[in-house]
Image 1 (cartoon, helix red, strand yellow):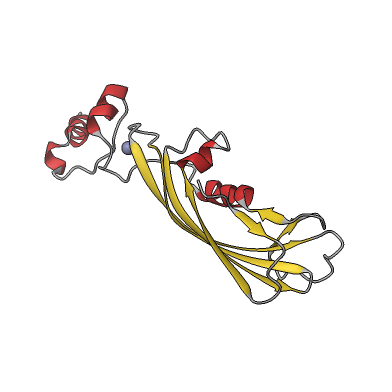
Image 2: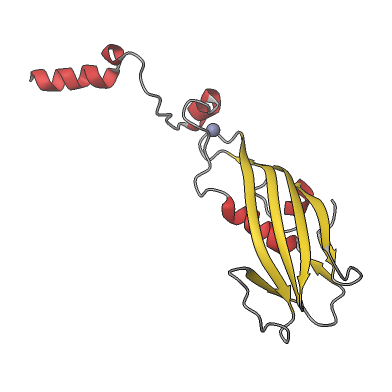
Length: 170
Ligand SMILES: [Zn+2]
């Protein structure tokens, strides 16, 4: 696992570019048991503005979770950006321009972006994690006794339309 640590010193001007990969060990380090696999490339561009360090993150890749319906692996694409500003409590005079503020101590030598990256990715995941219609594993769904709603290609043979016909004929 590459660490998501950015040095705060030693680069006075210009931009600092760093990239990391958030893999499954990264999520496991946060004791996340929902993530079965992950490959998210995180690239961070840092630039200094006065006392502030502006951080622009791009997160691209996918995470694998368990489908709520068939319990098979389900890949969820990740495509996110985040705009942050890292500053000390004393240096926070300027407007954050809508950026999320990360506070660091004046004595800090480096900035660990792990928690931020973790939060952004986890918050982006949908609440309902299921395969698109028709793509669940039918065997596990049957075994689990769950129903898959598949649009019937032939409405005449649909047992519900037959039933409806019976009910209507009474
Ligand atoms: Zn499924």
